[in-house]
Length: 180
Image 1 (cartoon, one colour):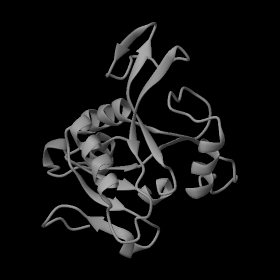
Image 2 (image 1 turned 90 degrees about the horizontal axis):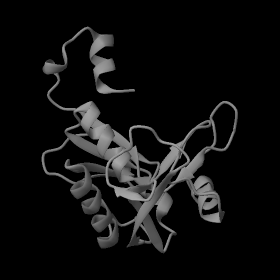
Image 3 (image 1 turned 90 degrees about the vertical axis):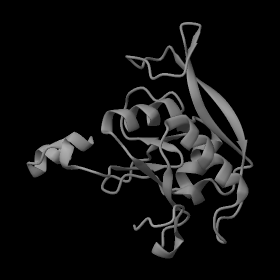
Image 4 (image 1 turned 45 degrees about the vertical axis):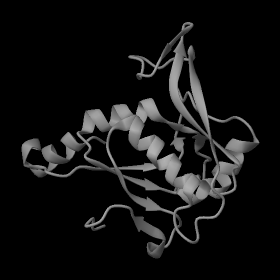
């Protein structure tokens, strides 16, 4: 769903919207078939799926899991006019010693940091490795803060809210004056 669809449904012009909050997970998931450059077909993907309870609510079917895809997130920010981000499920990655993030793609031998016009099986994710952060029970550890800053630098908008668990009390506001 894109922000323009909300305007259409509400019957208001996009120029009347002053704040667009994009909500994303600290990792990627996908339901059904189709291209997914960062998909994990190994025990890491399974650990992510189990920790994040990534199963269809109706069918119980396992969701496809993978590392965060920065070009895809940057594209979503651009298309939706997102002014700030809210990152969910940071705690799902607590037990990973290394966190990978897709910074671009190799397409037919060429590197790009932009989302290709069409995603095909020929698209290979290019990764940057960041240190894991361990426990988020006491807030945002330095390693998670570095991950967030990497995301902000890549997409050009601030991550103002971070969820470090399923309870409301585990929602952290990173910017002063921001209300959830």
